[in-house]
Picture 1 (cartoon, rainbow, N blue to C red):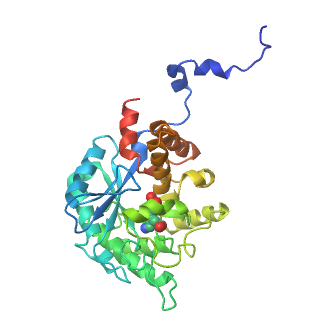
Picture 2 (cartoon, helix red, strand yellow):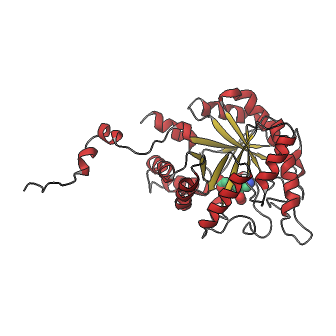
Picture 3 (cartoon, rainbow, N blue to C red):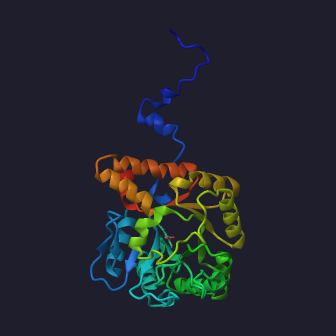
Length: 329
Ligand code: PBG
């Protein structure tokens, strides 16, 4: 039987890879990836993170090596998290010009030079003994405006250590405006801000909290991070951050919030990153280890879907291996 005309035959363009490539809508390249790295104070050897296979808390030396290795694969943007040896209620170490976060930034800049973009995660939870993203009031609530004063000083310390961009992840109100002002006043008008604009109070951050040793010691983060049910509010958060001077914005996590990524991209057209977070990574790794899924194919499918949803950039723990897979495809 012949098909009636007109009759769509989508399978015609699926016959071979060369044809599929021709009509492919979404690209995934190493240029789209940002690699998160952890550096820890006071260790002699890198300490593997059990819940994040392939990742470790680095020494300054292993951090340099890892970054160079990743950069050689074409992933040339990094976001750095510092894990200090000493924590206190105010997160004092975050300000130390010779603290681990700042030493890590300097090491990356020195090693990678102008060919890479070094992004400093800007938050207090790795530095406070209570594990919250800000300092506390006497009543034990996170004090928004006193936290902003500290964020301003962290931003300047990070800029002075060589950060190209700072990335405030604490979801305090007004954090982008406060940091922008502080950077400008300190003569760092050239340092940009990647705003964790719509960051949800997610259960997908579990492995990261092992890696950064920053699980809250009481309560949770629902008082500052967003309710997973809210997409319209996410757009308002993003618009506010753009208004306050953000240079790029982020939605986090990625996979459970693909709709939010699409809404934000359509509404703003702004440079948009999505964070494929630790729990998303751990799920893929755990299932792949058991032989239940093909880890490589699933990871590439996940990353492609985040790009298809509208993210320009993806912060992902798959960065290094994905760059290898893309090169051999
Ligand atoms: C907080 C911060 C977190 C992540 C990045 N920055 C954890 C949190 O909010 O509890 C999570 C990233 C991930 O899960 O990969 N500074």
